[in-house]
Length: 324
Image 1 (spheres, rainbow, N blue to C red):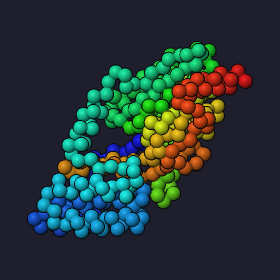
Image 2 (image 1 turned 120 degrees about the vertical axis):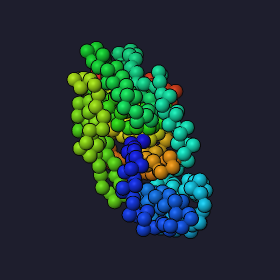
Image 3 (image 1 turned 90 degrees about the vertical axis):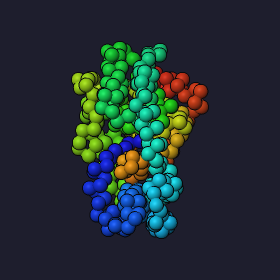
């Protein structure tokens, strides 16, 4: 997912007024009441939080959770309602689930980085899932992608193929930076919030910026831009941030997508840590491409082909487009 992570101190500052106004401070359950209001206020940012369904669910949860003795007693109810505010890409993770998820992310290692092979005159960049926010791992992911493209920049290739068939998402900014030599400079991805306001993700060289602030930059800042046919190969497993990469190439000259429809989580999330270590992932926007076409669900390929033949079909198009 194209996600923004918000730490506890920031959440407390942003939500303090709502929490104080709503909680039963001084009661035996004031800590739990504050926790419920903190959680609901985060969910209020969801893309469907202006719906009558969310308002009804919110009121019902407040009523049912009033008087609950422990914070842990609120977990199941909060997990059930978060998708009403944010849709199916949203989630609530308990402290235990959050810790397990973080441990799995921190175990990212060899085999989880971008890599390039050359097949019959075509560079094939495999772009895997990447969920880490650790600076060292972000740098490793981005630099491996950029450098693996750069080492082939002087070769007489027909073009490039970007394989995101098994990319199940995570952090979209390192992914875009990793493929930045193959992206044209300028707006490559946009987020559209529930008010219809668009925020742009911009590539310049090997730097990726969001709302005019640098998100990720490669160590290889002098890497050359590759101007050649580019095929993106996607599947039903291509999810979230992986879908963001697919959208980033939509509308780029000499670029086509092959394979299957994507999973259907072409939306942007905000990830917020709670006071007890739990986590809320709330969808706040849908993806749009550089031309302003809005997605939000499955992304259809330009050329639908069976997954077993998608690579071959994409390679054939790259050769024909290059020599045509």
